[in-house]
Length: 275
Image 1 (cartoon, rainbow, N blue to C red):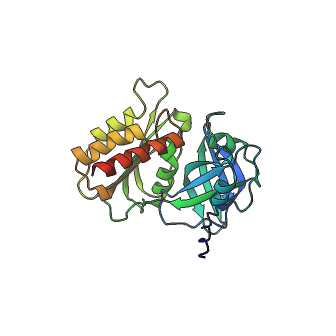
Image 2: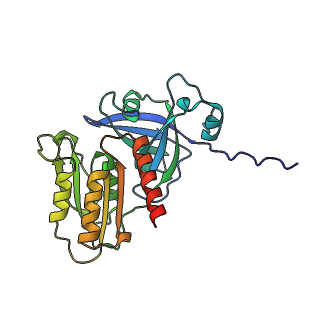
Image 3: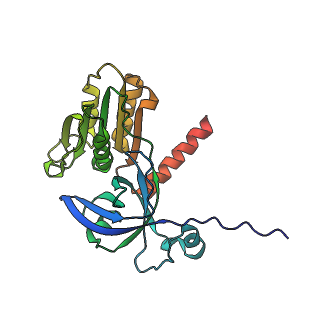
């Protein structure tokens, strides 16, 4: 009789809170220590954070294969995707910025209550973008959800590299300073007091840009609605090569991550069926 194949381990990686800081009224920075994180060299590297259900204890190290086999689905940890703001190899410090809007959501309230010594499990990192030193000009566009990736990318720009940075936030109190040694042209867009819809200012600004001659590399991430509109402009109207543009709808207005991921999976399946 053939023995069943051994179950593949889905052990997660461990991070321990070292300190927290509220860097703007709605942005909380959490610095973890982790011996498990492995840098993949991208500036948009992201991790899948796993938030346990209240009152539920899980065996450690957390293994999602074991959890799915032995716990009812309502007790499975909630997964949320977050971009890594910074990774310091020497100190083994992993920095993640969380948008916090009171009791809304899962990750924001967790970050607001986090204390040194708290443990959070994660998978990853993934990621695919980093500024190309050979590019003549960089375009970086996004909202709060993309701000950590944009900030990380700016810090990786070669000295003097030209970049236009367009970011939408709630108001001036949510603006952040950028580091690095690039030659930046930064514009902030505020939703507070604006008569337009979410991302309208970003879309209009991109449409009005006079792209310089030479090799352009673009990074456009954030709410899916404005990302799609800018995607159309860059590809269909401007004809930028697809391998020079990084696009991602991190989230969609009116949906949590679970609903948005399900919608993306359904759309991808339809596209495969039609091809």
